[in-house]
Image (tube, rainbow, N blue to C red; front, side, top):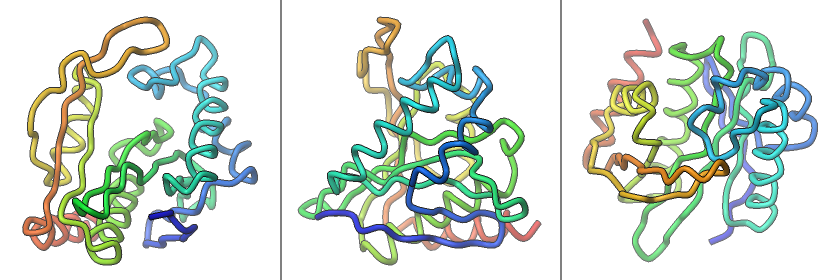
Length: 195
């Protein structure tokens, strides 16, 4: 299946198909090295990390292998991060959410919750998948806690999973949400967004 461009809109966040018009705002909002600390795009210059992320995700999107999104903060209209749906398998009815980053100023805000809600709802209710998976660097405890707060189940560690640009061999922690869990996860996320 090729992903088609789609905009997903919520009260606090909007996901727009990644486009060149987002790049300037993404460079500005991704200019903190801490944002990229655990990402495979880590560079000495955080703006170069943003540029590499944009290039890689634009390439994935152009091939139809992924739906890459700019994360828009509804209150300001700014692109404050990005994410992607990829690794879709029609035969196995699964998809992955990944390559996600947010500007530090929106960490632990309704923007992140809203965007994950929009992606999960699209995956389960539009694409009709049985499984959504997410993974993160095993050293990234903040990301693991954020994924667990969504209601995802920690499945285990993929050992020596990736070689990062600096040569570090990364272990990845795998999480998932399955279709039978989605109603409960959805209710929990909706409750968080109304607080």
